[in-house]
Length: 269
Image 1 (cartoon, helix red, strand yellow):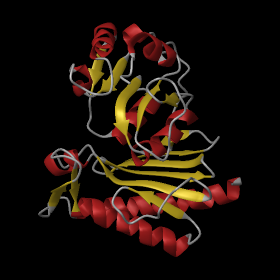
Image 2 (cartoon, helix red, strand yellow):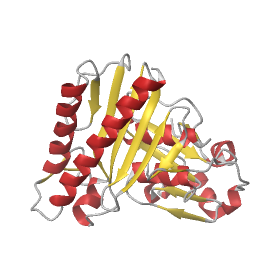
Image 3 (cartoon, one colour):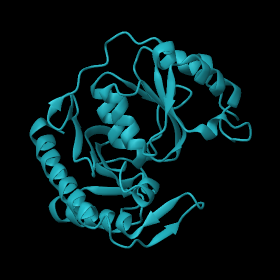
């Protein structure tokens, strides 16, 4: 994808996201239809579905050759990332959307033949948009984010993680290692939206984000934004991310990435 095409797609995608965010804000206090998916904590609302449908219609109208890889069933049957694929999470942080009416985001990552070209994450209620174009840097409301080149010891780091990874019965990771990580770092946080946690890493508000279970639409945009400021995004054991299936993830400042994985992360087989 050349710069002209990338910029055109970015500008249209940004307009779509702004419009979708405005639609959500206008209806934020409306009665909700809330359903569960994989478990009682995995929520979906009519707003998630309507917002993804909005993106599906906009993409097909303006970019009919592009594909949509989405969470709520309005996308294409994606087998690989050949061509240009929009990976969309219409509301990342649905539980926050339902319970708090804040701390959720629209996440749009646009990939061409598996390469991340455009990343957009929009904190809807704060009206804050994080953006990145490949090899063009990352921005917050149009202001360029600094690269993650400053010194960052693990002991002075703040890392986002779900407290369930500290429980011995969790099926994904050795809880003792996570416990030692929590004892070693300065503090932990959990915001309930993977998209927001990823842009906070890019911004330097967080130094890392460790999770055992995300889907591609949770990661796609944030990965592009973090990598544009020099951060590292891999699986929790340091491998290349699977952008088609559920995966673990470690996203962080480059100075702590390998140390966290090598010293504290042991995945269960």
